[in-house]
Image: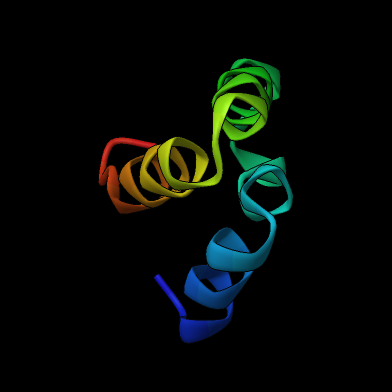
Amino acid sequence: MSIWRVLLSILCPPLAVLDKGCGSIVIVFILWLCGWIPGVIAALIILNNPNR
């Protein structure tokens, strides 16, 4: 995971997971609407997943 992805996930989490699939984008976007911190945590977890 690059430093740019981490910064992007902190600033705007849905943009950081654009290439991970539609489901990831929707989940992160909904969590981001619920609150900034849940969206950031979800984006970082998705970006750290070695299986994707």
